[in-house]
Length: 240
Image 1: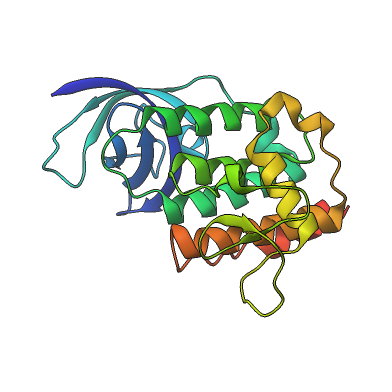
Image 2: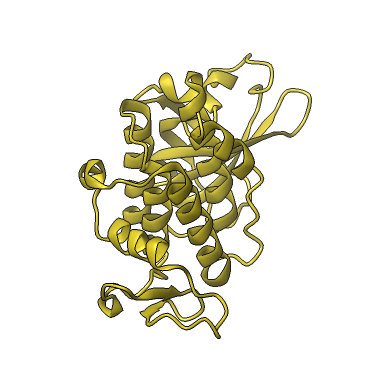
């Protein structure tokens, strides 16, 4: 069947001398892989520049649910991204996002809410400079997997128990309990939309700490092998 959908480029790998396999998270069909013939040499209508990771695309595709590889009839980048691919800070955050998304998204069924969140997040990263974006993105991607901490259990001074996803009184005898500062920031991030981020004041060390805490939470509740290689680069870029 022929279908129309928006998509987010997640990963591209060389398949042959001239072909590329593109992993694209789509709004209408979930995560799909496409064989793009001629894409590696730029000889077709779909060129390598169209397939840069995190590019937002409109597509017309030939879709067969029983095939592991589908094909693309038409593809265009809209809206085009410029700063995300050129600015070193935005690029570093984008690489971090991609590594996380490639390790947690396994859905072959559509999830319009999660797709919309990721799509809008890419646009926000492209258009704005928001220093608290990365921990906020992690907190809210957790929400879209339905594994977020129980914010109803939070009171001032409580800490997050990573195992059961609840805020509780501090207990130094138990493992996997976060500190009070990091726990409070995670609670605030979960309650905050993108526009509200300007009201959150986390310094560099607090921000890196919260990102690490959220990754630990994701390892326990979403993907136990979530080791992010780009974290060191992100830490270095954020320190500038």
